[in-house]
Length: 162
Image 1: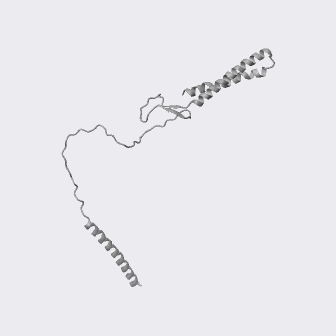
Image 2: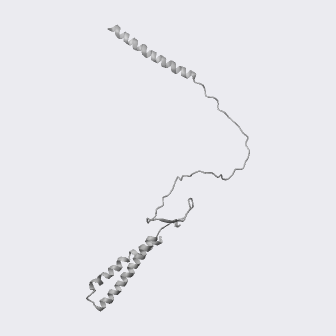
Image 3: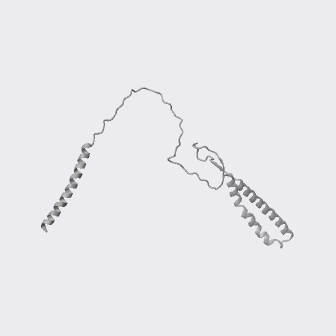
């Protein structure tokens, strides 16, 4: 049994030694066959003075590294743009115009409603002078119909000017 173990250990050592020796020879041959890099190529030229163009025309694209996002206070359709791409603008400059035709139409409607409320008030006042008990309930509503329109008219007028 002891002989058998020694024979197994010797066979294992022979196999491992053979593998180690083979790998050692492969690495050694690879290192010897390695060539030194060729020397660097150097060229020379004479220095002469020339004039260069200050700019060159070329076709290409440019991507901004920093930019801004423009947004407006009101949603709508842009009807006019008052700047060109790349143009410098100052704070407060008019950049775009929105289509205000719908706001102008709504403003006209509100002004007409206000005029109608004023006319109704005058009519009810003249009727109440002739028959005081007839329009008392309606007369209580007249100031509210006028006051209801008053806040929306300046807001709509302001939005048509922006």
